[in-house]
Length: 164
Image (cartoon, rainbow, N blue to C red; front, side, top):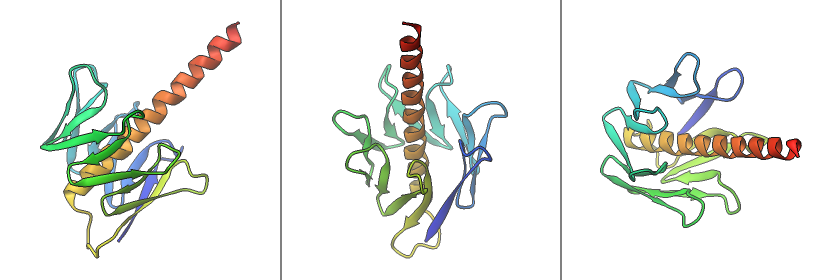
């Protein structure tokens, strides 16, 4: 089974995973709905707290989720990349932060190689299971958040250099 990942007109925001729409706030880049599941954030709006009924737990002041419902989220030693979420192993490309596999899912990227474009589910499933959809969304969300933070850090470094 193949699912197309669709983006908005500017190509910045993921708008759909297959037939599952992702709805955003009107003036924000923060998703509010994944299909019929509401997405909830903490009081400051900086950390995703729930996907539908599935609670996401963090360490006290951490920015990386430690639990997705009852599943533990395990990370790489240095990079903060998710390596496993519950029963699903998350594979990355050897020298990069991009996700390659999530359990039986394989993620393909666009021609420039910077944006997830298509997801393939091996095993003859007629539809993407809800738990795997939840994990896929969380992994893509974390990847986009990390790229956004790194891009902001690069912009700040360039501004500091230009002032000198």
